[in-house]
Length: 380
Image (cartoon, rainbow, N blue to C red; front, side, top):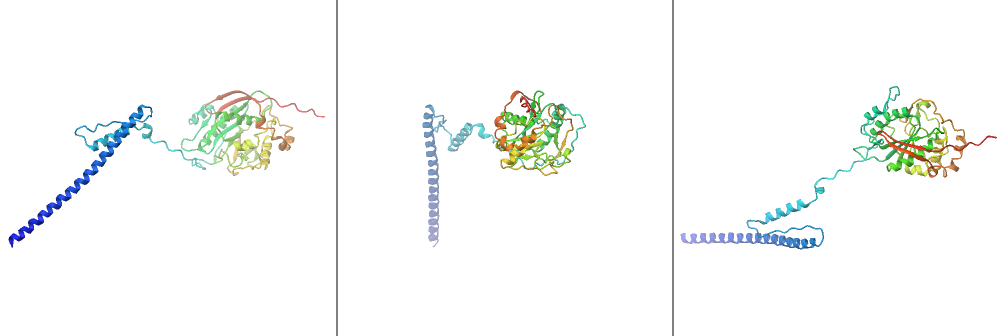
């Protein structure tokens, strides 16, 4: 009995050892075929590399590498690691540095606005002071927000002659306002040379033409140099319709003087400006051109948009009427004929002589000669 039990025990042990040997054999076969397949794949890649290197000699521009697999004490993992290091070393540096993220659009309501402003002209103003106050404004009076992408690229155009003191105050107040509004802008002074009769609208046409030579503007703000906004929520950019900004001046008791008033500060997109053929060139002297522009807008199927009266408030720098800018006695007759004249009198018929373009730290000065008014017909 004892011998029988011992024989069965030995039989079981032998079967167990046999099963373990069989399992070990299967595991070794699996590992062998796995390693063999990897080595076969690696050899095929090296062969492709050799063929590719030959092609590279003929001018394909691709780079391949040879590997010596007969090196002693070398494992498959070391070959793979070496290949990865070489591939990484061949990648251009531009791929290793992250590309800058695109700027987000500027908010419609900039968060840094103040609202109602205190505007005064009693303190003495100098260009040096204004320049120190606006270190981020670049040559020519240009500024672009560093942290967002504005919807419009705005050219601010000022018709000008002999108003140097007013310009200092205008730059002092407007540069900080425009920067808080996150406007991408440039400031252009259109200086009429000589002492002939002043022509505001023609200077604005000149400004439109010359600013487009400097940058690809798509929005144009036309402003008198003696008008300062009293609220920075009056945003200086273009809108779906032509914009009238200065709707409540102090000289008019902070009210719109009449429904068709379009004077002081206004804005049109490039498309809107061209649709009305720009501004009239034949209003010599003071008055009338603003009403003509208003007529052009309405006759071309557009409407004037305006800010809230509490936001569109302006202070005017008091001054005497300029010499050679007397009221135009023909303005009322011209206003009545806008429909007949606007297609032939405007940006399409503009003529002038460019004398000088000079970029200062706070603005660009464009000096021009625009001619003389035609002789007035003799009465009677």
